[in-house]
Amino acid sequence: MMKAIVNVSLKAGVLDSQGKAVQHALSSLHFHDVTDVRVGKQIILKLNTTDKEKAKADVTKMCEELLANTVIEDYEIELIS
Amino acid sequence: MKVTILQFPGTNCEYDTQHAFESLGAKTEILWHKAESVPSDTDLLVVAGGFSYGDYLRSGAIAKFSPVMNAVKVYAKNGGKVLGICNGFQVLTEAGLLPGALKRNEHLHFLSKHHNLKVVNNDNIFLEKLASGDVVNVPIAHHDGNYYIDETGLKELYKNNQVLLQYCDKDGNISNPNGSVDSIAGVCNKEKTVFGLMPHPERAMEKLLGSDDGVKLLQGFLSA
Image (tube, rainbow over all chains, first blue to last red; front, side):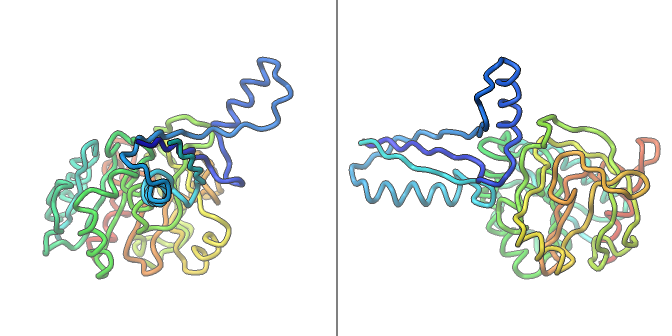
C-alpha cells in the first residue's frame, strides 16, 4: 500500500478570491503579518501498489485528467510508502 | 429542427430548456447521460444547467467522463452544433470543447438575478439575429461563473471573434458581476459550432417573468 497526497491550488497569477477573503478575515483578527493566503484542496489517495515510479506516473495522469483543471490550477504530488 | 438536451445526475434546467425550445417550435428530446450516442436527427445539442454530480471536485469536472460525453465530442468534432448553458458551459470547458475555465465568483456569493449582456460578435449562428452592441436582459444563477483565460488565450478569442457576450449595464457599459476576465459571459470555439454562456436564455422567454430576450438568443439556432 502507498499513500499519495495531492495538493491542488490555483496557479500563481490566477486571483484566489477565497484566499483574499481568508486574508481579510485574518487581518480583522489582528494577524497583520499575513501577506498572502492561497486556499487549495488536498486529495488523499490510497494506492494498491508498492511501485513508486508507477504510482507517480498514475497519479500524475489522474491530476492531468481529473483532479486538477490545469487551465487554472497547479498540483503537487507527495508519495508516502 | 430537433434539439437534444443532455441530462446528468444533478441537471435541473433540462425541462425549462425543453419548454423554451418547444415554445419556439422545435422538437426536443431529453438524453440521459448513460447514452452512448447522440440521436442522428439532432440539429442542436444542449448541455443544460444545474449541478451535475453535485459540482463535486469542480463544476463540470465529473460530468465530462459520463458515457455520453464521448458521443458529444464526436458530434462536435463532426461540426454538430452544441450549446452549453451555465453548468453546461462549465462541462464544455472541462471537456476541452471550449477554451478557458470557470472559477468561483470573485466575491464568493452565489448570484441569482437578471443581468444585462452586450453582444460582442454576431458573426455566428447563435447571435446572428442580433447586432453587435445590442443589449439583452437575461437571468444569471451561478456560484462558479468567473470566466478565466490566460492572456494568450484571450488574444486568440478576440482575434477569432469568439467572445460572444459581455456583462454590462442597461446602456451597454461594462458591469462585471463575478470577476470574469474582460466581463466575458459567453464564448464559442474557433469553428463557431460550440457555444457556452453562464446566463440562462431559457429563463427569459416571457415578459411576464421579467424578460423575453431569451427568444432572440435561442431563435438564432432554429433558423440555422
